[in-house]
Image (cartoon, rainbow, N blue to C red; front, side, top):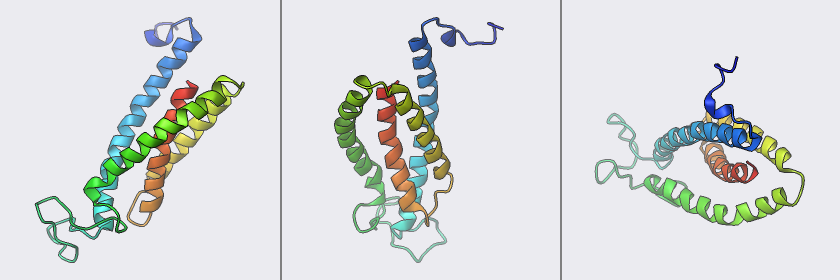
Length: 157
């Protein structure tokens, strides 16, 4: 039976086993965020009214090949969407971990926080499946929520 268990999970130290499982899950989540960010960029171009194919001539023309002149909700260009979200994530990552870390370190709620965070991450990933032009605001909110939940999970693990 021990031959079926990977060596990284046979560690007798429970914290090391938990960390190994956390990093395995994180690898899958990073891959899903990467793919989802590409989908969000394509949807953002449609929301901004840019041409998405050669047959579409109703949208705003693109000036330099793939550059879109339209703006998502009148705020940012689709090409700047991920960098703008990255700035917001960075600010959240500076503020959130000390608060969550204090909650986790000084109360007996580490496992509860980890379990609920994992459950919310799973539900948010399930919501991402339905990303489309109609659900773009929900998809963008889910994307932002996931980035902040990863910080919470990192604090709890």
